Image (cartoon, rainbow, N blue to C red):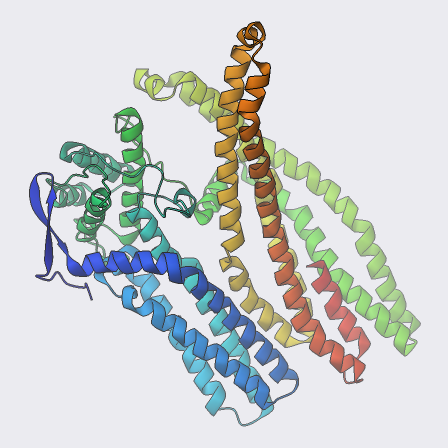
Length: 583
């Protein structure tokens, strides 16, 4: 299973020497390639289908027990078991265990066990319908967190290892047709490999003792020219395998001369970044005195970085959260509560209750634009204050930088940082980041109100949150379309710049018709890339709408049936429906 080094080795010329690559490791890479290309998508789809089956089963069984719901739930659990079996062969290989880390593997095992035990208990323990409902709620929460963990944390580790073995940092860099990156890692001699490993170790923050072990493990290795036999890919896979030998999988007990799984993943990705720089410029690092991590940030790291930057203006930051948070909570919870009270008063002919509900609604609708106006003021003050602090620090660093700083940060790069990059940061801050926490507060208020009417509403919503967060199919496709659009825009801009510079010659030679026909294909590609990019971006919003509709239907259909059968008051239905619609 690859946990221990075996005697099954394959001879291969690396750096003029003979080195070992265990057959088990080679088989692991082959399985990883097969899993990513053939199994990853279908298994992920089955995971979400299992959640839908179990959610429908428990929702229907909560309202009216029946054998049909039990059969649906059994089918879902069988599919879940098959998914677990499919990923089992690779999950406990030594290299993946050290790449992923013990925590992720152990948590995945615990969550899967929790799901199976919950289903078994649901089938054997309950004696009454109320007991069955409680165990059903436990099952759907266990299943939701298992699906979320495996699809958001566990499976992406397998994806990242596959991307790294291909010399890529993301799925968008791997061609769908060929299954390879456009420019594979190749022609890296042993000396350059050692230099890259040392620089990447320093950039990642690995200890000196661990860096020495990295250098020792990679001694004599190189990455040859990439031929049709994929020799360069095998050489790079050998490097990844060698680095796994110095990883201590238990991060909390990591030894000083070892690296943690997180450092292992970042080290490999940082080496890829340095290899690309070397292949493009012939230099590993332009600034020998200041080597910093250049690997792209994950979403969680991005949010954490924004919080750190916001602490520079912490008063403006916390003040910016208040108005929109109040507006979200009042609009979602206040509307549902007020409308439910108003309806209840009208039905019972209680004028006092109806009056209170009416004025609550009027207060909510009247205060909402005022709070949003105040939010606009404080949020823009926070955004501009934070960006001003960043801009001032950047200016100070630029003015005090030495010769090496000027060599590494050219004029065009600095201008882009002060104009384009900082503008993107400001847009992200004002349009997304500052509204993230108020949105979560508003959703929480809606869930609490829904739970007062039907406790299962909160249970289902809690189970739905991790599932929604884990869905990345549409976002990854949108990212790939955006990268393709940017690439084609760059090619079009290059051709356009050449045409602008040669306008006089084009007019003299009367070559305008030829230039137009030459650029026709590029114009068509640009149009298609922009259309596909915008379409994929809107699909992300459409997917969110579909998920919201699925949640509302699971909530409202059984409750609506009870209202139609006069088993549930109409005001309870309206109290639940209003916050769901607002959310």
